[in-house]
Image (cartoon, rainbow, N blue to C red):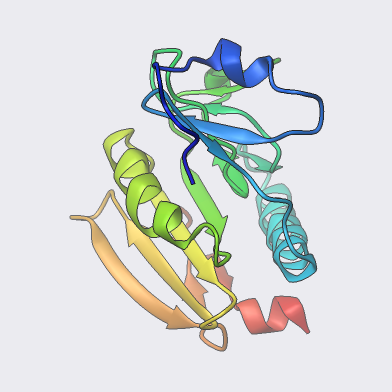
Length: 181
């Protein structure tokens, strides 16, 4: 939920938040981030590990970062997000502060408080920032929505039981139920 906005906020305002308080900044508006639930963290941990292990097994050059990890989507100081998982294949986008520009693949784990953001605002921001692939993992419905922005914005819906092909890797398949067992 956005804070009352009397002005346009910047990344300086994000960095000035009290220690331990997390928020995202989208188009100059600050959105508080509630602490994640245990299942959310379980999914983030297992997905991050599976992706990291795949990249490593292929001697890949992509980097996998679970939240909190700063992503500056645009070349401005009005957008700062912390996707649950970011995969960046262009290391020139990485610096000590995080990622400047669009990650190749972003995964968000939905909670009741983040549904509107993940399926709406962030979907639009990630697509327009030229993220190549965006997954929305919904533990409440046990579904995964995959947006393949590189291939005519193909959208696919899966259950946790399905094998899901990763768009940015030809031979990588994930099964959420297997990761959680």
